Image (cartoon, rainbow, N blue to C red; front, side, top):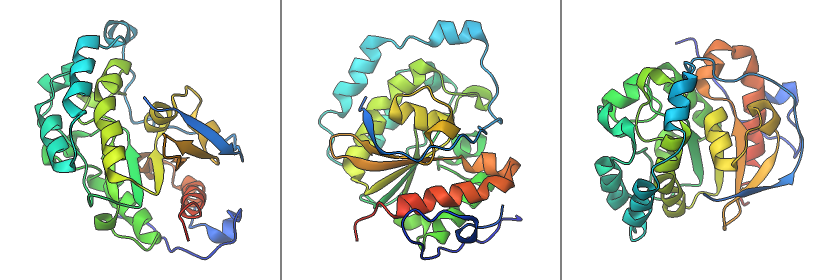
Length: 257
């Protein structure tokens, strides 16, 4: 598919220079800063009409509360998967083919969080399939890992029509599932892929380029969280692969020795 093979190299802390790169609601607090003013966000998402945003921007509180209650006593990913499949808390339930819960071991050191399922994910019920999924697989292999050793999921469990950006109400409705997944998986590091994922996890409206290059401590367990570009963006902008490799090296350094 024309995907460059990425190979993990030993690098000293802070070394994210070109020679180490391949070719071209919980709150989080920032603990180390190395900002980069790079721009570039996932342009594949179709813009949502303003009227639709205004109509759906406020979540139905009773439904969100019901979701929160439904996951409060869940103690396993298998049980949570059933709750996700039964969810009708937002309008996406009416248009989905099936929910996309995510996949990986019950507990994983690495957790990759994308934005929302696309057409193929909606059909197959799996996250990150197709060309973007193939590129993510290469990224994971570069870390000397396989997809079976990490957990991959999205902020939303249902596909937005036309692959548009998730609406605030949809993110809010799905948030209890996302938080419970993180609690159960107990990752050692989280990599947020794409603007929607990063902004949702960090409760921020900053551009993705502004959020990159920093280490955040996420949730009560202070899980290191790193922001990077979505693989779909790299398919259109392969020259930014080096930036993503720098993000992965930064995430790798957060793992306990």
